[in-house]
Length: 83
Image (tube, rainbow, N blue to C red; front, side):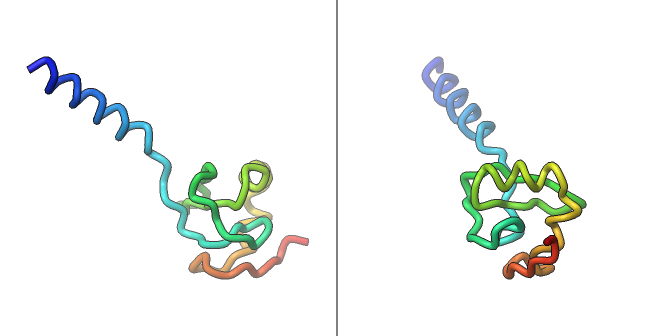
């Protein structure tokens, strides 16, 4: 019984550590490069944005209004508008 509880506790801990939401976009709203699933996501206006690198997630967080419009509505294409 103790082994079962121990295994269950490990499973629950591992599951709770992987709570990052999946980004809706396939391209980075800063650079236009492919999104890296290992990079932290940012939620903005009900959408979860992904990024190519950790520098881009920081830039987006500082000014999401500027960068959110750089990608198509389905998140598949980079359409830079924030020069």
